[in-house]
Amino acid sequence: MTEGSKNEPDYSPVYYPKNINEDILISEEPAVLTTSNGKIPGQCKIVLKSLPITRLGFFIDLDITDIKFIFGDPLENIKELHLPERNLHVPGFPIAFGGNLGKNNKASITWCLKNEPLVIKGNHDTHLSEVIFHINNLKDFYSLGKDYVHKTNAGGLTALFCANFLWRDWDIEIRSLPQTSDIMNDLKANGGSGLTHVGILRKRDNSTFESKHAENIIMGLRFMLSFAKGAWCTPALLVGFDEHNQKKWESLISPDSGYNFPQTWFDIHHVEQLEILFPKFMDKWVDDSWNETIRSAIYWYLKACDSHNGIDLGIILIQAAIERLAYEYAVNQKKLLTLKGFKDLWASDKFRLLFSSIDIPLDIHMSLRNMIEAKTRLKWLDAPQAFTEVRNSLVHPDHKRGGELQDIYYETWKMGLWYLELAILRLCGYDHTYSNRLTSKMIGDIEKVPWDKG
Image (cartoon, helix red, strand yellow):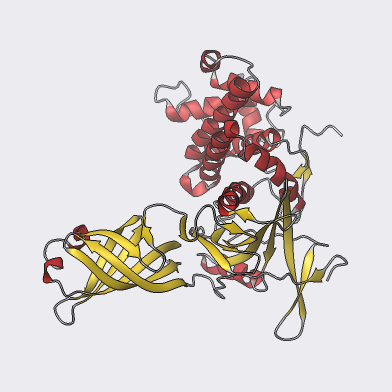
């Protein structure tokens, strides 16, 4: 244990699967299906399914006594799912019907949620003291000096690493679990989804708060963690407790599936990068003028990060994201030019306007040798022109360079992701270290952001 180690905290997962790809039973309770022929009682299991993808499902077992229900398409007959003990109408639709109607009148219905998250206990105004949430497939970060001591069943000691996110009067902690390392090894070998971390949200003065405020902060945390991971990383299965430790609120949202850990700006040996970014990111998140832009830019960034989608698609999405950031910054925030003036700019000029305004270099990085050679040969001015020319060759069938630039697609994709990461970090006001995807060779290899001249 390190010098800063402390005793294990007083919170733990509410739902604690021990293995990857393990289904979680959330609840089993009475249900009523409303059909075109009346109401049918049944028993519903709310289950977080792990395979083939991680998703929430409502599985209802029925005794069918009304023969009219059998005729036609039973799924079309079903209009509504109601959970009477919660007085909850579950928005969604039936997706599967099965059973043995001819022998014992037993049937089963699978109900799919229309939208997530779904609040199944309490409401958006419920007062809480803390919210526990669960995270699957988060990078196994390390935080030396900020770990907890955990006593194993064998009597030994191990470390549970944690990260603390402070913003205004809010305090979030995320920590690993005793089995996190084993889960990560299983995920690497077999893929799928597994619980790797648990988190808690509280007020710094331990006062109560309304659940709707917790929802918005945790949604912001979702986007920041996803930006750090390079793939969706959703705090899931949110459970709220009051000051007497009674469960008063529960919101269901599925964690994300798939073992996918692309390279990003975040280095897992430097969790302070996330801790420093979080309050700056949240200031942008709660700013109505920035929220939708941040959402869109990170959504496109995550799509672009996944090379399985194709790096050509990634290049196209990166340009869309950077142009969106440039528009918000130059037109709406700084009033550097009008909407018409912005639309009249070449895409490369939109890049230059943004990057030069926020101290991001315009030159092609020296590590991108093929792009530098292409720049010299094709007389490109700088990185913005190089990137947008490659992008244009992909989307415009009559482009003069169509089919000639395949050799630099990969470097263009890498360079574009680097620029997009820097732009988001800079616009959030982040001024610490990062992992430079163009030069980093190993975990722990970090450098200062380029606009830090100190």
